[in-house]
Structures are given as structure tokens and as C-alpha cells.
Length: 109
Image (tube, rainbow, N blue to C red; front, side, top):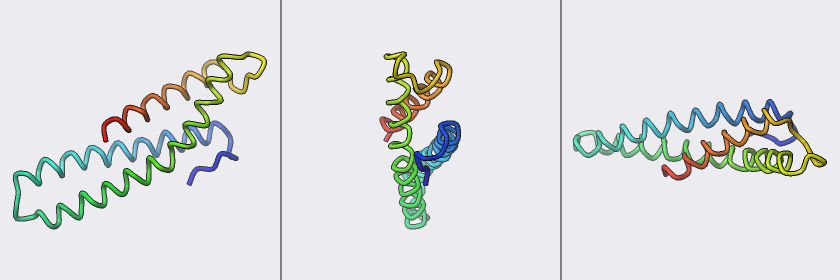
């Protein structure tokens, strides 16, 4: 579990790493779904694999979404109001790019 009390860099790195795990699970899920339609013999084992991958994806997105949302909110605030600046411009753009990638992955589901 990623806590917001850790440094921004740590939260960003952990969230990015967890997003990669979610993407790998999504790719495996796509492969499992495509092979299940062509192979009836291993359908029960495949169904268990799909269920496990789905749980991994759901848990991963559930873990990182609030963290990335909070980081992105602070980044937007930093860009919009220099007096309330929390992050520098490079950090803001990295965080917002991660938030955009996460949003795309949510759309893929």
C-alpha cells in the first residue's frame, strides 16, 4: 500500500511501478481472453487465470488511483497558482503524465 506521508518522489516511483504491474496484468488478461475463445479444453483453468488477473488489476488500480489523484491535484495547483506552489514544473509535468497514463488504463477496462 502506498501512503501519502511518504515523499513525493517515493509515491511517484511506487505508483509508476505499480502501474507497470497493472499494465502487464492487462496484457496477460488480453492474451488469456483471446486464447479462451479458441481453446475449450483449458477453459476452467483459464477462467481462474482471468479471475486472478482481474483481481490483480482491480487491486492495483485501487491502490494507486487515490495516490496519483492527490499528486495530480497538487501538481495542478502548483502550475495554476505560483503562490501555492508545491512542486516544480518538471515534477508537475511528470506527475500529470502519470495521471494521464492511469486514466487511459482505466478507460481500457
